[in-house]
Amino acid sequence: MGTVLVVDGANVVGARPDGWWKDRAGAATRLHLQLMVADVPQDRVVLVLEGAAKGGVRPGKDAHVRTVHAKGNGDDTIVAEAKAASEAGHRVFVVTADRILMGRVERWGAMIMTPTWLLDHLD
Image (cartoon, rainbow, N blue to C red; front, top):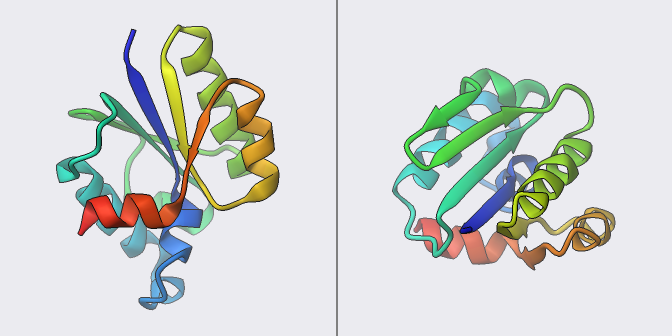
């Protein structure tokens, strides 16, 4: 069916101390733009944003990147996206360093990728 990379936007942005906390929306915009041109091995990318970061990128699809705004807890949205992709027959990869979230998505067969792995593909 294909491969899907679900990105914990807050976790990836927070992995790089570049002043993101001063402008969460701007940091989300930069991450989205980087994902648009990133050379990742997955077919599709789902960027999950929460809180103030949602102001940086509108929800919806741009080429192979789909941005999802969490209605509440970002982790719950990431799990829902991983579950939906898995149930649709896709091989799922989730980018996060959150150990509790890792356990939750691994239940749906997701492979875990670290924020460092993703950042290496963005540079």
